[in-house]
Image 1 (cartoon, helix red, strand yellow):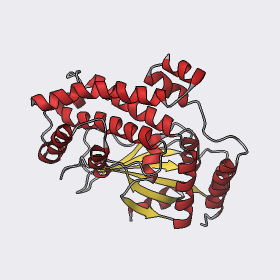
Image 2 (cartoon, rainbow, N blue to C red):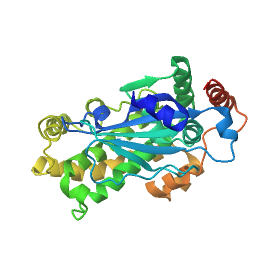
Image 3 (tube, one colour):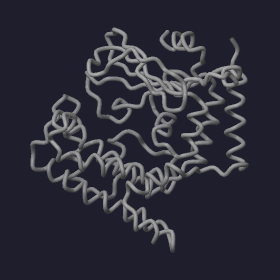
Image 4 (tube, rainbow, N blue to C red):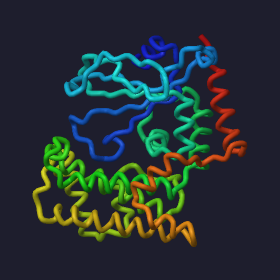
Length: 313
């Protein structure tokens, strides 16, 4: 029903809709909100219009009193706005992303798009054939080294914030940030070990089980923290074992980063070693993974064209 309302209000169609949140990662609790991502597209005539189409916007349902609504999308590539807040018994943030913007994010190895299309919780698929081909293009396109670097950057940035208790987000839910840090580390470890992106688990218990870098006792502690604390809304880091794992995380970021660097060779390795994880991520944002005119580029262009041409009023 809500997707139909979006289509009517914006003159678009929803191609794909999936969850990307703690419900996928295994860190949710009964009161956890839902972060839902919808990939939308317009008819060809709208793309030819003098007025640019809206590329991103959000609709919030439920008790999110920290956000202010009322702003309308105004077009352009950086137009992410909170469109409206509606009363609901559920706490849901629905983010809409336009298809041609998604294709640009795909060729830049964006980890958010990767997780949307590998989400285990899917709400809507406009065409099974189109979604399957999009996934194949993503798996053919994404560079596991770049994806691992993104995850390490997430871990490194959030780990630095764990000691900053002045930030409300950290002070209120330090254990939640703890698992953001470890999800990034364990995802990067999985990618370095397998040297491909396809099959990367989003579910933290699966990543914990796979890990070769943490011992069985540490795995047991993490699983206990998930099941007896985080999933029951207990967010304090209040045990020696948990504090030890916070310290271990910093060590593991360095270890996985070295493994990632060791996977490269020669001059490229030397050039990369001189840059921090965050410097490498900034550089990657300007890079694309598909050469213009390549077979994969043509497949993506043809697929986007096919989807847009399929739009009928």
